[in-house]
Image 1 (cartoon, rainbow over the protein chains, first blue to last red):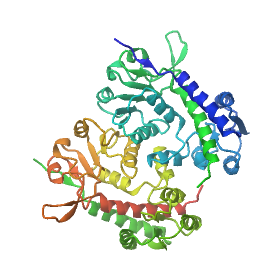
Image 2 (cartoon, rainbow over the protein chains, first blue to last red):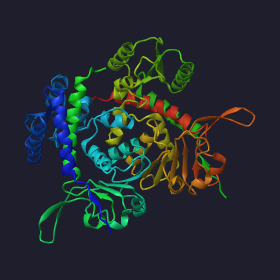
Image 3 (cartoon, rainbow over the protein chains, first blue to last red):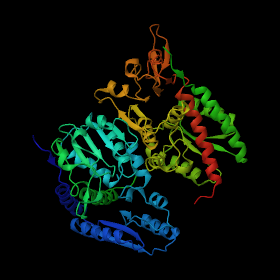
Image 4 (cartoon, rainbow over the protein chains, first blue to last red):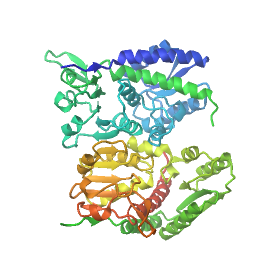
Length: 288
Length: 288
């Protein structure tokens, strides 16, 4: 039995970055990403450091704006408004989580939609529903890119999206509708779940449950995209990262499959960079 | 064989209006809807007149702002910004279609989200995707209300939405995901369509195709919501309005069904009024 082709997130992401490097050169001027970090969450600081590195590689200037953990909501608001109004700033992102006193929803809604390279302003996801040009949330965009990389025709395909989270499941479902797939969105209350997944030409899992998707649930030849990032312990107490998909089992049935790690994760970072370059390119156009 | 219970849009809409009449009294002050009409499209003028009447019945003050057909984009923009900034204005809607020189998307995106009672600003539909409080597009809201009126539990139910338009299909699908249904969105490229609709506990048709949904496609006892509004000619050349559903056939199988006319249509108007009252109520709260 043939095994699935691995959709290599690292190599796809590198191809995107090569392309971005050229696009940054074409833009000619400064291409930048202004990131906001409140407090000193270790995870966020590490993430910021990695972003800075990733940006540097494609020629994006990364500026980190830090405020203390105790910064009141209004101070964060003022910083965002200043970045919104600064014509030299073309891309803004805010590191999560924010301290308790800062209302994350309001801050995200405040970022100017055309500078919102993480696609967290609701106007950006709303623009997708309305079929308009928009900066799409990076993970959802990564999922679409990985599906497209297989060459499958999305129009008319049956796509099942397991999990309807606000960050991944719902935006991915909307993007697939936009691409004219037949879209099935499932959740923990779904009945006859296996019957639905078995019909899927494209199967996306974004549920955050290890080993949720097993080979008996997958159609032969299907494209399987694993968005899950779960930390599990093996029998020796050693921790490792796995997705939602039983990779070893499912790869015997699927036509294409993303690994975890090395799948959607690196591609998501590449999509942040691409949104950043896109925002800079749009900024060069006359705003109508 | 038992026939389906008719979901009476007129009587549901009247119940909503009775409730709104009381809510307007509770608010105490002026509750208003400011509508913008550009040009002299006969359909829009008639629609505006009917809106004024509907508003009057529940105690909403309706103000029509008219600009000539020749008004340039910037003049329409200025009017919207003036209404956005006027604290006495709590609800804004813009009549479609707009003249050629006016960019409808940009105008809709300009309406302050908390005054956007038609839910046309992408931020409002985006807020639904993100699970936040929002003014929801009126037709999608009407569909949800009509489903809820049957008493069916939406969580875990299988809902099939036929048609993925930006105005109805996609927003309805997102609202159903938010309500934790298993959601299936189909379109003209969907294969094995009947098999999908036959599994639906809730079947919504928003395709704009007369007689698309026939009894053999409907599960016994299903809730059937017909969003189609199609003008057809009978054998004597007389025109009448029908939905997407073969009403006479499907009512023998379904558990609940909406008629056309007298179903989703009147409820959509009621939802515009409800959004208007809700916007006025929110305006009474301190804006954080």
